[in-house]
Length: 271
Image (cartoon, rainbow, N blue to C red; front, side, top):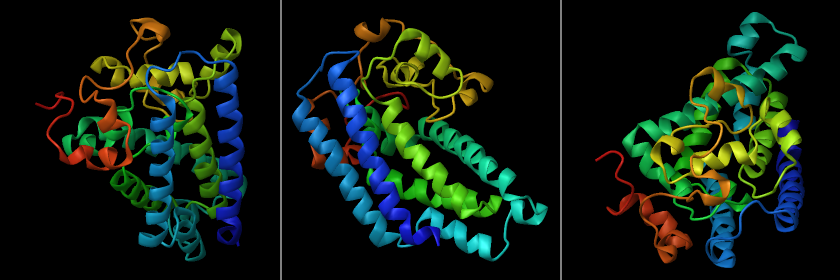
């Protein structure tokens, strides 16, 4: 069964992608580090480890496991339509990616969800570890949401596993500080979210933060009118993060990140 080897496969792919992207952004960075790298990168990775451990305890059955239960029960849209695997698996990947795009938009538009999501945006720099930095409550809500979508679709477990692997790898890639040749970046951007495309989303300028929501597939931003080609100040001149808080000690330490949604000193877009 997929679930038996899912953790080992996901960890192996995660480690390989993380190492490759870390080396890439070290050898060919787009931007120089704006703040101390060691503290913030370490804290971002520690938050990932904490989230993974708590998710395993609170939700022992992963999104893939939930999809397997629905698949065995022949529940959901794809089962009702009797779609063959060669259609249902790629459809699962594409439709779950669209669902996560919608989730991301909601995280920016609904005030209490933004309070959780701002932990991701409060990072004062932008590199592969930014793609790992999400508040624990956001991770839990996201797992429940993806599981519900997978069940409603009747997604095959293999398709959900492929999506989850691509989502994790894509989040790291789109947040990496690795310079890509211009022609390759332009070609990739027509299909998938590139670091230069997603970096705009981490601008301190609100209209730029509220754009380029995609994680993997770049079509959604173009189709739904949320695409922005370049930051106004350019990739080297733009400021990463939020207007506040900008205290490195608060936003670059694990405890500070966990407490950030519950303190009063943060971005004022909903005030």
